[in-house]
Length: 222
Ligand SMILES: O=c1ccn([C@@H]2O[C@H](COP(=O)(O)OP(=O)(O)O[C@H]3O[C@H](CO)[C@@H](O)[C@H](O)[C@H]3O)[C@@H](O)[C@H]2O)c(=O)[nH]1
Ligand SMILES: [Mg+2]
Image 1: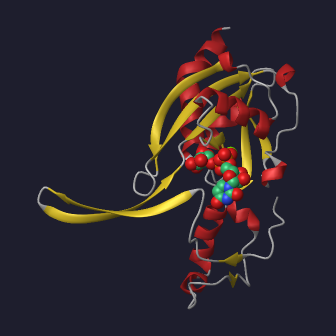
Image 2: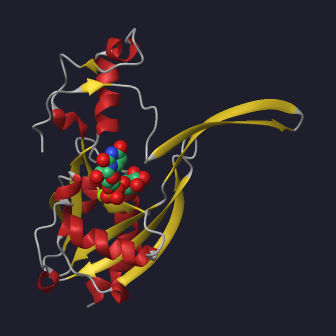
Image 3: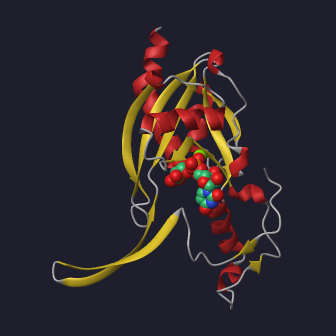
């Protein structure tokens, strides 16, 4: 996963994943504008393996996270004179600075599938567990990136057992996905959630806390 080579930064003129816009408006009499991007909505799934008493997270290389770090250490890479061409990144940081721990998640890009169906597909593709749709519990939904994308993410909970494991996961190789599945033992999960040495999404932190207040107590009473 960390063999990331031949990096080059280029312009993004058109993309199937994001479309930048500017909205002009007048609010309470004041003229304003706001720049934003349209992106897909998404689903994410907190997966708890009850056979092994652990959470399943995915770890992957995130170019956006990587390039945040790159700008911090090599701001000149973003000030390239020629904005229209590819600019090789000659002294890249190690790829691991762009690897994050996340909930299993996927974009909502198939209008014929329900959010639940997309969530089950992501659990199978990324983590290798075949979860019946009736095992999914909708936790809630929220807006992510309110300043930039405002897209909606719907969060589900799925309890799985070792018997549901039908494959290795790892993402869709044909789409170039390269994902590592990581098990976080329940007993270590709150320490993990607040340990800044492990770069992670807010979804991981929020859902681990949701589990503590909504599920963990029930497990103790079993
Ligand atoms: O610029 C891009 C963007 C996407 N892809 C492809 O699209 C796939 C998208 O994967 P998917 O698993 O569907 O979505 P995620 O990348 O996991 O993103 C979702 O999960 C993230 C973590 O919660 C959220 O931040 C995002 O908003 C949400 O879309 C990737 O694997 C790639 O194959 C590209 O090749 N290039
Ligand atoms: Mg994903």
